[in-house]
Image 1: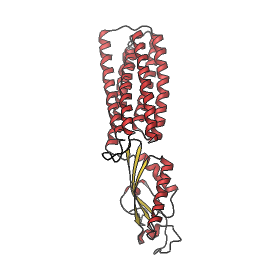
Image 2: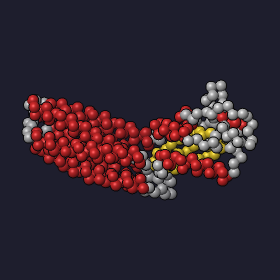
Image 3: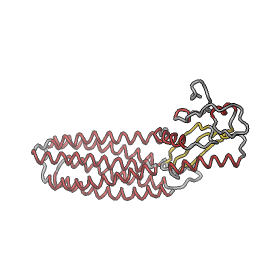
Image 4: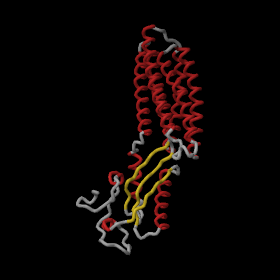
Length: 334
């Protein structure tokens, strides 16, 4: 819950900042009449709208679980990111339209030096804000903040392209470059929006985060307890900044209920230390069977029926399957 509140505070300041930077870019466009600067300003309109949507989604996501939403409200972040991505695509289309219209009207450009300074300042501020959003978003598993951070840094890169174009125009007096930059920006912005929409849809559809799973497999292998004989059917679902983890843990069959629960606590506490406290667990325990003996390195086991052969390394492939590990001809197949 603390992470959700932190995400909300960061998004609030991002929204306020987006409004200020949009005003600065509109002023820069007004004094220069540059369509490239206008395209940068139009993208900032999306920053403002997306910031408001992101703020609302994080407000909803920060609400605790209730009877109607037992897993919390974190999915609101995926919806927010999807809307933001769609708005970014729309901004790219609008920029392309304005570029064509400007070319047909043959508009003049002036006071490029003043416009250059104004948007250069916005670029620096945007990059810093984007960096903070990405850093907090990664730490708190917030797709809304990650989307905002990526959008802000994309805005920075597009602004840098505009700055480069303005410098070239000031040096060469070749003003059609203004239209070329705006057109190139529109396609770049549309592609960025598409990536955000795709990520949002993957979250709504509960697509596995393979990068997170691989990291989890690595740390589990490095910190296996002797009573963790087998781990399988591992699944992770994201609800905004909260993770829901399901798995089956095989422990020695002769452990009593309290001892088995201690092993579950050890597993969950370890994962929370590694991946943050916003995790909900559902761990099903299995008692070991004779076929587990060859891969179990609990050498003090009083009921061992077969000698130990070797430890089976946990991998992404064999942890995701819903089958117990066994020693086979290949040593790692299920």
